[in-house]
Image 1 (cartoon, rainbow, N blue to C red):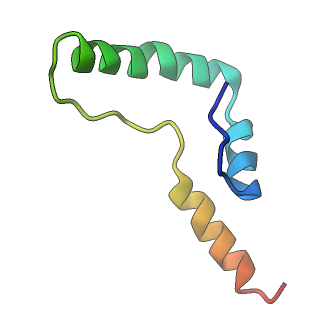
Image 2: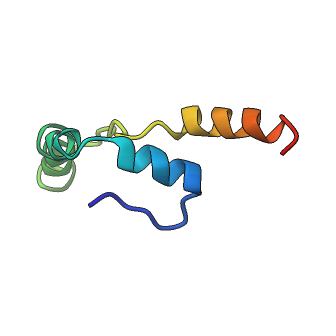
Length: 68
């Protein structure tokens, strides 16, 4: 289940538009290896995010500028 705490409606829409299969794939192929490297082998690695909220913010800013 994706984290939804303190998200805007546009961000929630974006989060739930991601298919469950992609979410599961991300957890198994990206997050799990990151977690193992980081907390078992104590390596400093960078985690790639599943969601890119920059796209959502740019759409939201554009819509707000329209004069709603």
